[in-house]
Each structure stands twice: as structure tokens, then as C-alpha cells.
Length: 123
Image (cartoon, rainbow, N blue to C red):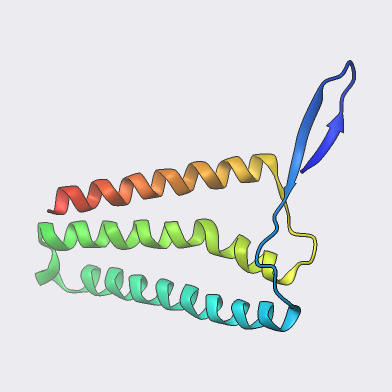
């Protein structure tokens, strides 16, 4: 956590330093490769679901409507957290700004609640 003195004994947090996985550089590269593959498979799988539902008119039913929305939420969920994690696996300092941290936390929570609500509606 980096603190910045702005006068009169008031301190403002400007960024956080993420610790990540306490492993060596070779293991970090392995983790980078594994998480990159999972990320690509997530995007491709959900993109395929969206593409098939939009192309086939027989799949324009309520069940597939909700499945397509679930695929969009899954893509947004993955795109919210995984890119920052991949950057942190390669970058030695691992900083994230306070605004970036709060934005990522808010979006993560929003997508989690949205996914749960979609699953409740689908059930």
C-alpha cells in the first residue's frame, strides 16, 4: 500500500501492491500459461454459445435467451479479473491503483450477483 501525505496529518491511499503467488519466476510463467489457456477457452466457449444461439433461429427460446445472457456475464466476469492477474504474473511490482481496485471489486460483485440472479430465474 502506497501512502501519500497531503498535509495536516491526512493520508491518502494511491495504490495497492498485490502479493500474488509467492513462487519463483519459472512457476509464474507456468501459471501464466495455464491461466491464459483457461481464459482463452472461457472466451471461446462462451463466444461459441453466443454465436450458435444468434445464428440458429430454433434456439430463440426463453431457455437459450437466459443461456446467452449467462454466457455474456461469464465473459464479463472473466474479463474483469483475469487480465489483471496475468499482468501481475509477469510484472514484478504488481501495483494496482485504488480506483482500479475499487472498480474491479465493484464489477466482480455486480457480475457475481447478476450470475446468481440469472441462475435463480433459470431454475
